[in-house]
Amino acid sequence: MISLGLLLFASSCNSQQTAKQQAIAEKNAIEAARPGTIPSKSGGWTMRAKIDGKDFTASSLMPPAVAGRIIGYYKSAYIGLPYDRRYLVVGKKINFGESNAVDLSVPDDDNFYAGRAGEMKITRVTSDWAEGVFHFTATSHGSSKTFNVTDGFFRIAVGR
Image (cartoon, rainbow, N blue to C red; front, side, top):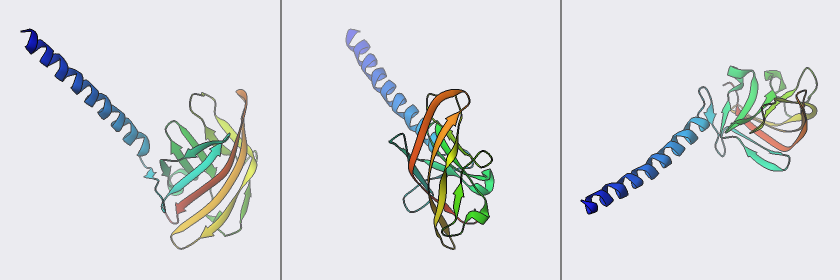
């Protein structure tokens, strides 16, 4: 009886670990594939930046045609850049301001931040893709924190 009990206990512990691993895998898949988003990949849809020096690499992006913004998601964080198809001209600079702000959400913070100082520049446009760089400083009316976002880069499909 004791041997049978130990055998059952050991096998249940193994299945708990498998269940935990499965739950983590499912959580990661949901975060990477929010409804309506496109998973990011090298050479495809991409957004990356540094938020106060820490790497942000989007796991998925919302197509601008759907959201009206260029939005990159990573876990509970996101960056939402202003978008207008008329921006897609190489060399075009878009200055961020009160009526043209970037949205920023950071993990473990209930405040929403707006980037009202900074710019985005379109660096490449082909028949299939548009690329740009960006940087901004984000603040919130609900917090005294300031976030500096630097080294931003995005690539989106044109016409989607």
